[in-house]
Image 1 (cartoon, rainbow, N blue to C red):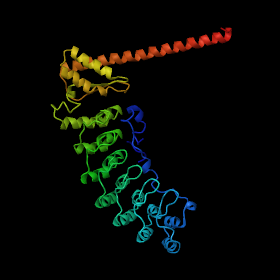
Image 2 (tube, rainbow, N blue to C red):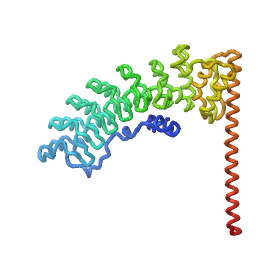
Image 3 (spheres, rainbow, N blue to C red):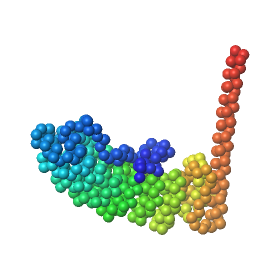
Length: 390
């Protein structure tokens, strides 16, 4: 799948658009290169034998030299860590039989169980679970074994971890629960699996982003469809006050916008104006223009009042003012048939916004011309000084 969204796949690079906080992305480095980078020359005899999986050699070393079962290498890894990362179950059994410690942490604060799950060595992970290893110990990124099982789309391992007491609502340092991680990584099967396991569908990350917002930010139409079928809250806002629809519009995800619009049309009562940003939009036109700001929305709302429209109409227009974004050409979207009066009013607003947009572009052009002329004058003066010495 590549990198994460929440610097993530389609979401990569949007942090500068959304601003600090709301546009911050989740760190994906924890899931890259799950195995260990090992230089055999730097390993001791026991670690080298465990890495290679030579059981007789491990047994002989333990019998003759007694080097210490839990001795760590330069990266704080024990022989158990290395054996689990390589999937040498017989070596794991031997080390456990000799009573090695289960919860020793390596340089990234990962237990041997985390490495077994991360490297998809289910047999080793099962052995460790049977010996009482805690599946809820987080690593340096806050990820638990369940996070790595979800990322790997390992349903069997996930089922086993849950049966041994793994916390289905554990959060990593980004605030992602396993369910949010599955949505964020677009792991459809794991999302459906966690839904059956009664995961909290309303969980939010550190930026108060819901599963639906994460799915929209990733541009995943399939994931949005799944979440809408679960009747997830479409009006939840993140810490910057943005909803899933706001992100869909600002990212130009037309199909996702349509999905959200259709869902609201079918499931949101018409009189629920307090919770709906789409209340009253069946008879209005959404105008998308490049460079249009909140002042434009205020101008449109004022025009609505001057035109004799009710205050409620002006408020409805302001509710959708965030839809006026940088799209270049104007796009008009009409959801339902409107009365002639409604059409006339919508056209009036569209013309008003278009006029403001044109004036904005003219002002930008004049400013550029003024700067260019100033630059020419300065350069001319410099040449005169060089030529004539004054």
